[in-house]
Image (tube, rainbow, N blue to C red; front, side):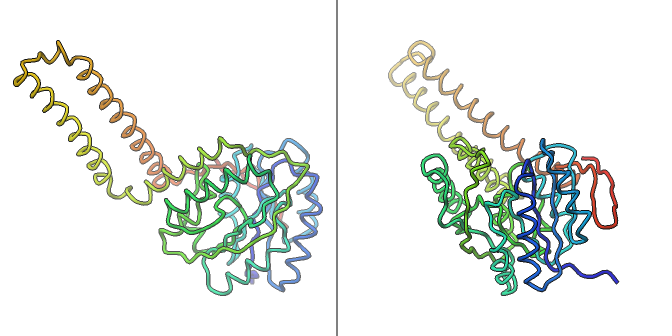
Length: 328
C-alpha cells in the first residue's frame, strides 16, 4: 500500500546550484523533526548553470525527492504550477530556492494549516532589501492590492505560502498570478492567515525586481479584479461604460445643437475641432478599453476551457526513475 504524503514542498529552481546542497540539508533536517511524511519537489526551470545535475545527484540518493525538469525557462508561475500539479501531499508549501526563505519557518506553516486554515501566507515583516528600489514599491503595491482585492495581507509578493491540497488543486495559474493565489482563493471563501517569516537577502543573487514591476503587478491586479467580479456578468461593466460614454456624447451633442439653433453658429464652422476631438476620443477610449477587456476574457476562457498547460515538462525523476514528457 502506498504511503500517504502529508507534506509537499514545491521549490522552483533557476540558476541556484551554489545553494542547493545547503537548501536540501536544511529542508531534510527540518522536515524530519516534524515526524510527518513528506516529499521535496524541485522544479528545474531551464537553468543555465549545473543546477539540474546537482538536483539529479540529490534525487538519486533520496526517495523523498521528486525532480521535475521543464523544457526551458517558463518563469516562476509556470514552475509552481508544474509542482502543484504533481504534488501528492495533503499540505502543499511553496518557497523560493535561493535560501531567502528559511526552511526553519516551515513548522509554523504546518501548525497553522493544522489549526484549520486553508492558506497560510508568509509576511516578510523585516525585509532586508534596499528601501527605495524594492521595499517602498512593494509597500505601495501591497497596499493597493489589499484595497482592491479586499484580502488584507501585508505581503502578496512572497512565494512562501502553505495551502491545503483541495484549495490549490482547484486554482489554475497563468501569467504572473502566483502572487495572487490568496485573491483567487478568496473568491472560493478560503480561510487565510498571515504569519511573519524571516527574510534573508542573498548577496550572490542579483535582484530582478525594480520599480517598473510595481506597474506590472498593478495591471495584473486590475485584470484579476475584473475576472473575479465581472467575468460572469460582462454586461454590467460594459453597460456602465456605455451609459457613461453616452451621457458625455449626448451632452456634447445637445450643447452643439443648442449653439447651432439658438445662437445660429454653424456646427462645423465654429465647433469643428471640438466635435472632431470629442468623437475621436470617445472612439479611441471605447476601442482601447473594450478590446483590452474582451481580449483578457477570451484569454482566460481559452485557458479554462482547453485546460492548456503553461509549462512543458521534459522529464520527471523519482525513486522509481519514471520519466515522461508532456506537451504544452
